[in-house]
Image 1 (cartoon, rainbow, N blue to C red):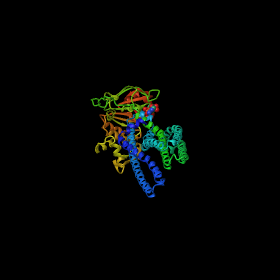
Image 2 (spheres, helix red, strand yellow):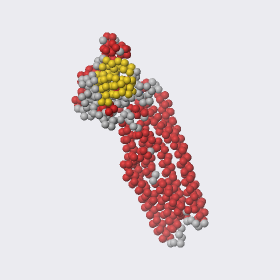
Image 3 (tube, protein in one colour):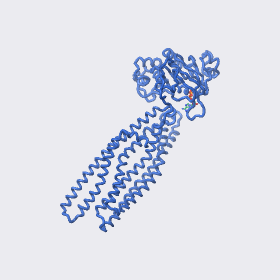
Image 4 (spheres, rainbow, N blue to C red):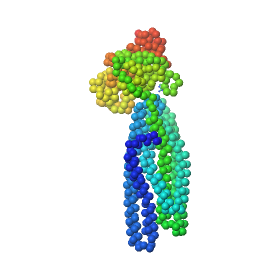
Length: 582
Ligand SMILES: Nc1ncnc2c1ncn2[C@@H]1O[C@H](COP(=O)(O)OP(=O)(O)OP(=O)(O)O)[C@@H](O)[C@H]1O
């Protein structure tokens, strides 16, 4: 938790002001029992003084007490405002820091923390810290002042009864330590169970159609029930411990009051104490116990918030695997769009064997380099290495003759128009999604990109054309339409290199052919790398790379591979007839 204290720095003035107000409040509260004692001792019990003088004394002291209470109340309000501001500001800054950090994560780190867990950390965990900080500012300074001040004042009033304070403090300490030991381990479990519940909920919502199609609602309900019940049971356990704690504290409080009355009555009878002093002693004892109650409340909150803080610090401390070099090289040279793989091998984090083995090839500007191979042969992995979504384990990838690890990530990615295998659109309009590629694109650019990607026809069919709404993740348009918009978005960027990861798979054959034809015409000088499963999509590429279990088993054009590469021939004959292939 201490690691996160640096995020409190901007609020240091607010915290100092809150401490001053808290100090004033504690002093005011500590002075009240004295006044009350004076009212009883000097106002009520002094029968030898005239009644009018005593009434005046009681009223005057009462007014002073009222003013002190008012000042204390104002301090409470001020501290409340300050505490809310600091806690809300801190959580805002933490959310920003976590979000920014997650933005810098490579795919490996995103794979390590699940999406559900990252969401819980950004929301629920930060809220835990916000609650604790607000509570701490209100109580953490006030309670010790009250506790220590109360003890001093109580001993001042009656040193002979101070053992009662000792009994109260020891009983409360035993209770707090016991609760702490029982409840602490459960807090970590609770955060993990919230993660689990989030994960199940997310999967259920995003996979709703699959669940319905497979009639697995009952199974999913059971899975959700299980996650829900586990969380509920752990919460119930923790709440039961708390439910036991507060009545026990009340019991201790009432027991202490009885002890004070019992011991005080004896002292009053022996004339060694005045009634007012006993009443003041009782109030100080209650103030000490309240201070302990406040501290125990914080101690209950701390374990839970410290688990949350650890989880946030874990995200903030994670160093992204993919980093920018200290002295990035420039990509702007004569070799525009030149890509070279030099003996590249790659394996995923924690995997035993390489997914890609000793890959070497070049992709040239003005040419289409297609990658084909069976499912799981490593095609997507291979192209994900170019924009540095992952780094190679061995070998080198050169873009414009420079190793991609020597270039800043933003410079590198500026040169690349990437169309992922699973199209992903953002909520907004068609235009806002296309402008994601280049916010300053002209209307002509938008039209040209939509034309090349064969998206113009369906955009025109929409009532609001480019202004038509796109729902979250493009759920209100078809898979093929999503792919075409993703392609248009990459085209608007006008980069030197285009990477299409199986981006034509949801298109019908006619659209696929038309799209490739216009890409060829309009992107004559760009480097195009495309992954495809269909032989018809790759047939006309200048270079085709055939992958099999992460190894290159053939490189050449369609004609050459039909003569020399068995794997390519098998793929080709499984999809097209001899006539179509010739
Ligand atoms: N994030 C990951 N972590 C670990 N292994 C992975 C990861 N992504 C892919 N793999 C594994 O790497 C191998 C290659 O996957 P890749 O997605 O590159 O294949 P592909 O040829 O593109 O397949 P497809 O044509 O089905 O998309 C597969 O065995 C896959 O299980």
